[in-house]
Image 1 (cartoon, rainbow, N blue to C red):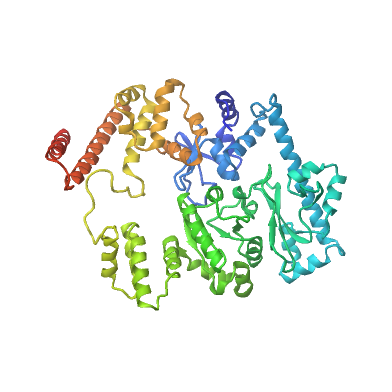
Image 2: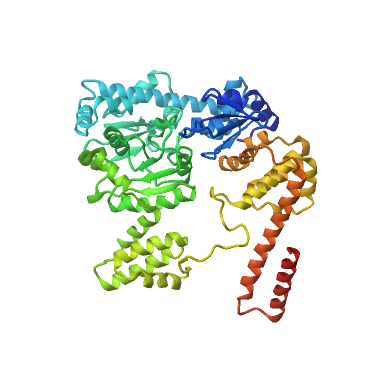
Length: 585
């Protein structure tokens, strides 16, 4: 939800960032900022800075940054709304509209009631599991699957008796209504008969917990050969399988290098039992964008470790691009003999799994391997078809990646590297760069730290505008979209122009999505722009204009290579190139 501007101002005012951050790490003054080793990632040299006057933080190591809201989001693995809720509670503030909005109050009360019903259902299922008589078969099944008492307790595993109304009777006796239990997904209503009965019967129960520890729903597994093997809570007011991951609640306050994405509950539990404790599972659905974004809040690298059968491999292919598109580094762990992760660690243990992880395939290597399975590489014609298809795929990659994967294709097919590269060019790609000199014009080259130099110049200009009204007025004279190509900097500059002296960087950043907040808070990298901010702004504007001219000259030179240009179009292009070159002398 969007929070009223005045209310958000008060929230930020009552939650001083120094006070909040100090609950997690000791801050020490240096210059105009406070410093510490970053609590968001492991480091030995302090690179985490807090600016008391700007009420912002920034880490030079992991590049996280923003207001106190973004800090709580990162530390506690919360959504923006959840972080605001937590800070509001800390400050003793009511959330806006909740006092007078009866509908909102009813919705919150209903969700609270449903999560309480799920909690009491989970307790009931656990009691049934441990009951010597009722849970005897479930206990035996769990023992056969290697689920010792410690694991059963750790994951809250329970048992739903093979009865149509045992849970129903129990929860109705606690004061819940049939409607509430149906809404929570605990009971099912037969539309034709009007009867209501237990949703889970005669199954092992796996509670699904949110990151805050609330029971949101359940997964239920048969203990025999019946179908379907698993049934899960459907969408309810408190649970949506597309927005959650099984086992993620175990990692709320942990600092992880990576997470391992598996398919099922037993894979997470089996790996945990073997000592691999950073696995999570999708919940009866193909990997979703929402789940990828959830993973991104915890780690930068994800290993996909789906089952080794065809269905698992197909699911892997579907999930790869979703993770990549969210900016995650992706690796694929492949299992031999169609095994799933739980089966594999039972045989080979954690050491075997770690070996597979060390040899995990990159995203593109896996795609090439998956592609190869569609061809009989022992057949010459099929091998040629695979080589053509693989080269067409590799042709779309970055040059340095191309060389790596052309070698992989050469090894798999036996074709010469030069022939494969030529095939890639024929498919529409570029020839691999064999030591060509770097491009001299424009901002094409990256700084040593990997940052785009244009972003550095745009940020310096923006800092000058924030520090100095004269620098802001000078910059206003130029078209903003020509100066700021970074959309985050452009939006911030436009907000600064619109609000003038009333502009608050902390408040502005506090309302941004996480990634945009990090980019905007990178303005904290500089203590001061310079003693002469007006001169700094002028120099930045000139450089950006020169780079814009260089970009336009390059575009026009590319246009001149077209064979369908008219004489008039060619002359116009040449005149424009000449004009821009002279302007930069």
